[in-house]
Image (tube, rainbow, N blue to C red; front, side):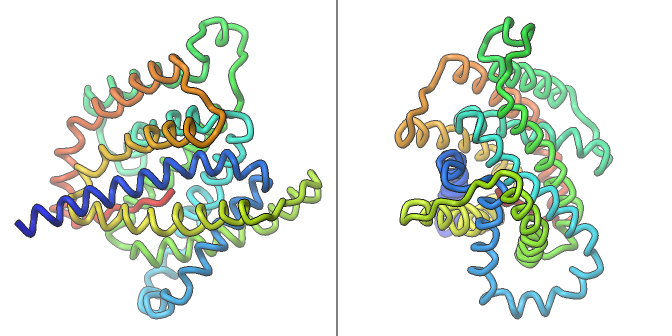
Length: 317
């Protein structure tokens, strides 16, 4: 009875994490009207870093030696996951809808599988190859808005291509995180990479301001946006995901990532002027089916590897 209750709790945590991350796309789309992308990303991680600091003194002292030994890995994680992925997503949301961005982002597991071939020396199964091809077709359908003429004339939304760039960075971040997940402590790694991301974003934000002259617009509403991305999306969702995965296992948890675009779509329709179009529904189904198909075999393999190597999942969006 207790085991069943724990599993239900794990499912709820995974749903909560994806609901918050889904909302992050919508909030991000609204937030870029108040803050330039680099400054927006800087504020997000600065808030997360400051909120975590009081709780990280002891863990950081305990983990400092192992963190210092892998400082180059931490820097790479900060560049790809903290400074790179989030900033490019916020930049992309100036040009595309949160619905499109979340659906394109849902191809992340497929790009992770591709990077895993080169970094983790994993092999792709037939199902994974078929899933990747299907998802590429789905993404192509979405960014072309279901029109062949859009491809022929190259009238493709630049924002969708920026999201794809962000997905590449996040996939690289995830594979590197997976490679060192049995070595680097999850929370301390997240904390240190957040700090490194701040150091990277601070001078870039200054350059952004000097070149664009765009100033942030502070209000109760816009500060609420910062608290959402800095506290809920960066800390609450991160902890919910990791605790949820620890309860039900990484192999089963991966499927829950498909809820992210669902929540993003619901929130976008409810709270913004975005509309859901047929090409997004069709493309989204193709992408989701491709992800599920590619995961069909890898779930069993990952589950076995996790038991053998004591791999802990590493995730934050």
